[in-house]
Image 1: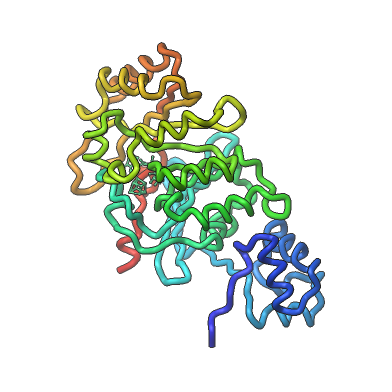
Image 2 (image 1 turned 135 degrees about the vertical axis):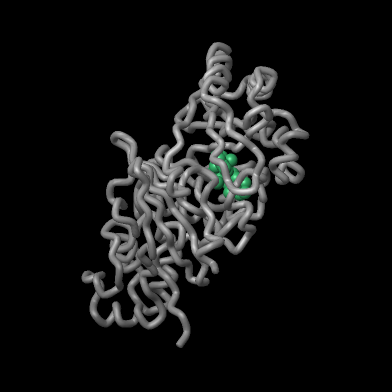
Length: 341
Ligand SMILES: C[S@@+](CC[C@H](N)C(=O)[O-])C[C@H]1O[C@@H](n2cnc3c(N)ncnc32)[C@H](O)[C@@H]1O
Ligand code: SF4
C-alpha cells in the first residue's frame, strides 16, 4: 500500500489543487483549511461539512498527517522537551518554554544540521534531512500546550534558512487568514546567516530575525562556525543594513559568551562598531556545556560588564536566561543521535 499524502502543511492554493485532484468542489479547499488550521482536527472523518462521499474520495489519497510526540521530558523550571518521529523514521525535538504570560515553542526545522558549529550538539549530530512544512507545523499543533502558545522561535534543531522552501510555506500558513492567522511579530527565525536565502526571507516574510553572531572577529568566528567561510558575517551585515528595521520588525543578534574567547571589552567595542547604524538588539547567551568541547561559559560578572558597556553606548542588550538545561533542552543542546540508535 502506498503512503498517503498529508493535508497539514498545504497552503490554500495547494488545497485547491487537492480538491480538484479528488473531484471535490473548489470551495472545499477553504473548508479543509478551517478544519486543519482553525479546528485542528486529527482525521478527515472529522471534517463534517464535507459530504461523506467527498471525505471518502479525499481519504483514498490523503490523511491529515498529525502525529503526537513519542516522548516528553519536564524540567524543574517548567520547560518541556518533546520528541517527535518523522515520516522517514528519524527523530526531532521541540521545546516549550513557559514564562509569565508567555508560552514559547522552540521548533526544529531539520533533523540535525549541516553547519557544524563547534559549540552545538545538533551540529555534532551531522545532517540527517530536512523537515517538511507538515513536520514543522505538527510540532506546533500536536503538543498539550498548543492552544496556549504565544510565540514560535526557529531555534531548535537545524538551520531554518537551509530549508527555505519549507520554512516559507510554514510561515505563510502560520500568518495567513486561512491558516493560524498569527501576527508575524510572534515568530522569530534564528540563523547563522545563509545570505542568499536571508535576502529572500527579508523580502518575502515579516517575521522577526535573530542572527547568531558570537564574535565580531572574522578569524575567531571561522574557528567556531565553519559557515563563516561561505556566508561571512560582513556580507550578512551589509545585507541587513539595506533594510529598514525601525518599524515593527525586530532584528536581534545572539551572542554566546565564552570565557576568555569573546567576552572582553575589546570584543564589546568591536561588536558595537560593526553593528553601528543598525536598529537592533543583542542577546547575550550563556554557553550550555556539551560533551567533548573545551569552551566554558563566561562568568555572570563578565556578562553584566559586557551588557552594561553596550547599553551605555546606546545599543540595547540583554542577558538571556537559560531554560531547561537539566533536561538538555536549552539552546544548542538538542540532539537525537541517541534516539536514532
Ligand atoms: C540551535 S540554533 C538553531 C537556529 C540556527 N541554526 C542558528 O544557529 O541560529 C539556536 C541558537 O542556539 C545557539 N546555541 C547553539 N549551541 C549552543 C550552546 N551550546 N549554548 C548556548 N547556545 C547555543 C545558537 O548559536 C543559536 O543562536
Ligand atoms: S548553532 Fe545552529 S547552525 Fe550551528 S550547528 Fe547548531 S543548529 Fe546548526
